[in-house]
Length: 343
Length: 240
Image 1 (cartoon, rainbow over the protein chains, first blue to last red):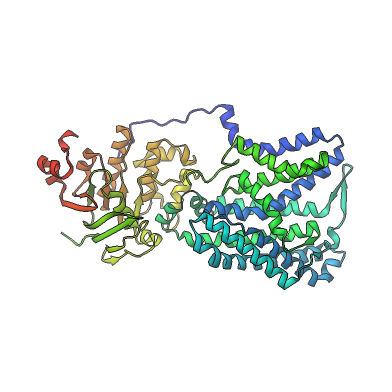
Image 2: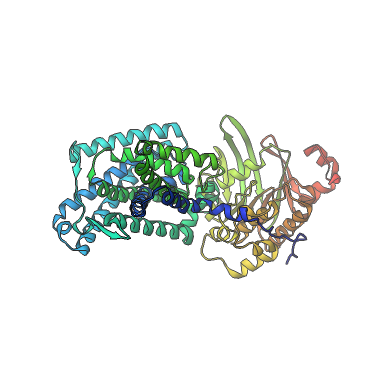
């Protein structure tokens, strides 16, 4: 057996700034919340806006998390991602309309069961649609970014038109399940029940994604594939299957986000996914391509920023998230938690 | 000589408009270290990448233990027992050393006895087991790259310039580890520019030029014949 190598490796002691650097993106969320507290004199308004911002952030995260993995792992710029949001919303709303008896009953259990069925239906539909979308539209253009942009935008338009064919051109209004209407009062602030559910669901999905990516072999393969797909294949893993699986999962998550977003706005339209794409792209870019953690933090920042600024200076709200993106990219040009460094 | 574990028959590989390999004929004997030598840019790396399937040979045949793997996808070639250590090391910088190794153990959990053996060959990997691989030094990254190939027994190892740019102390560590691998009866095709390492490890050698094998034979024959070295590679191993 060989001897130990001659050199004796040691770990240099990092400075406080170096140790804090990886946590800086995480610290941005409490810093923004604190800044909101200082800027908004009324504490109950601040609390309401904070919960509203977190809920909005969680829903954006649900819609964006799949796209960041598709970007990072597959190097695919999917402008059609919004189609899954729209289809998810329409399928989910259709299921809820069918289950009117359950959603109208003043029972939290029945309401949540109806929402669960709507979410499952939406995720199954968008997951299946994701599989077909990847096979028909994305697969032929791997490695060609310009073609990807053109063909996925085309796919989005086709899907939007199919929604109009199936559900009609009018917007569909939907009221939230009975037990999720209204608000609870906490410390003088009115906190909408639905938003609290959205925050809880977002946290559960984030925890599940993080656990899958950090604690399972398939998660390891995905994380390694984001960095160096060629080497993952040289180790013996069929990355193509992982690609398809991630695309399906990402599409299903967008469908879930679509249901939640539709119920949040209480109206669904064929173009709602397309409209959400601006926020989704901002979140994916500032989070760092391929990073679920970055996407989560970015979504919370966008949600909070939008709500605080809309309250303080409504006219600036439209550009606040663009400003946030510019500021973060000037600080970290590859996004807050970049995963894809070598591409 | 027994049946070779790997045989390349008239392999041609093009990358875009460039004809890199132009009829490579090569045999890697079982249980021996075959050095693939030659100047920069003659097609050594392309040969390894063609074998593992990263770049497709568009003509000729690549046989692993008699099985034609020319058109097989890379994961299937790897699962057929080919371990690959690329020139750029190919480590996953955002994963820990442990995660890199777990990922390399394709057939299941890492065998603890095998892992102990890897740790004895590369002790820093045990020290930095929970550290992100991107924080390792260049030598440690190279150790991880080779350790990943060693973590499970392979039929054939393809290793591309494992000592490139490393300090002498690390080079000797690498050489010892490869000798360990060789002592276990592994079959290795090794691209190496460091001739003292090549001389110490190689059983046989193939010299490439212009995308072809221009000489193959016993390593000792090449080592002892300065005129042959001069003719094949334009330099003498005596200088190393």
